[in-house]
Image 1 (cartoon, helix red, strand yellow):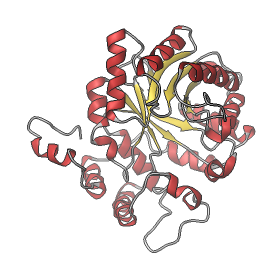
Image 2 (cartoon, helix red, strand yellow; image 1 turned 60 degrees about the horizontal axis):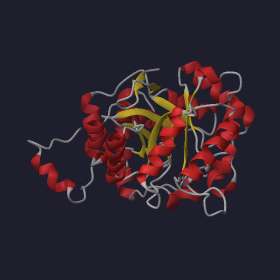
Image 3 (tube, one colour; image 1 turned 90 degrees about the horizontal axis):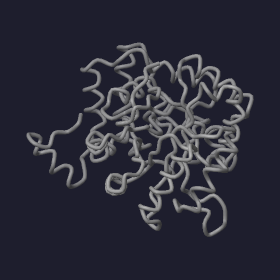
Image 4 (cartoon, one colour; image 1 turned 30 degrees about the horizontal axis):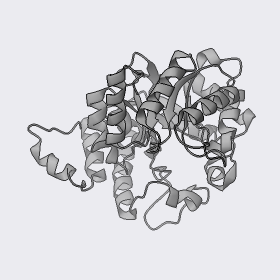
Length: 341
C-alpha cells in the first residue's frame, strides 16, 4: 500500500481508504448501498488491514449514525492501527441547532461521534457541506478549539465550492487558526468537474483530495452496458437521482475505452478507473466501498501497478466534456494558465 501526504500536512494516508456508507443499511437510501453488520464489518476491516489500507471514512448521517457505531465496534482493540475519517454538518435531528457548522452543533456532534466510534480522537474531521448561515470565523475557531483539545487531529471539508474553501483558508491564515488540508470531493472518469477549479486550487493551497464515489456513483462497475438493463443489484435503481448525473452516451463512450484497456492489461473496469484517479494531481486518497468481500478484494487490486501514459491519454480523451465558462476560455491561455493535467 502506498502512502501519501494529505495536502500540505505532514500526515500520511493510504492511497485507498474504505468508505463505510455500506455499514448499517438504515433507511431506503443507505439500504440501497448495503447493510453490512458488525460481524461483516469486522471481516472487512481485517482484509483492509492485511492489505495496508488503514483509513476508514464515515459520517454522522450515514445510516442515521449506525455506520459510525458499527465502525466503532469493528475496530475495537486495534484503534492504534486505524485512521478514522468522518464528517458532519448535515441535519441530524429535528431541533433548530441539529444542523450546520455552528459552534453549538459541531461541539455536540463531535462528542457524540467520539462515543459512537469508541475513541477519544478523530484523525481527519471534515465538514460535510458549506454552511452559509454560520460565520466562517466561528466555524474555524470551533474546529481550532477541538484540535487544541485533542479531539481532532486534522481538518478538511467536503463538497465545497472553490470560493467557499478559499475564504476559509484565507481566514485561517489571517487569524492563525488550524488550516484545512483535505477536500473530500467527487471525482471520477465520468465526473471530472473537480479538475476545473478545485484541483488547481488544491495544488496552489496545499489541499489534498480525498475522492468519494470514484466509480461514478456505481456506474463504472463494468456491469452497465449500452442496450442492457441495469443489473438487479445496482443501487442506481433507487439512488440515481440523488447522485451525480451522467448522460448515457457519455458513460458508454468511457466504458468502451475502459473495455479496450481491460483487454490490454487484464485488469477489471473498476480497477482501471481507480488506477486512473491515483495518477491525477492532488489526489491523496481514493475512497473505495464494497458490499462484500469479493468487491473489496477487487477494488484493492487497483494498486501495485500503473496505466501507461498512452492508456491514460485514451481515457482522458474518452471522458472529456466541454467545460463551462470561464474554464473553456481559460483553456486557451495555456501558455500562462496551464491545466494541472
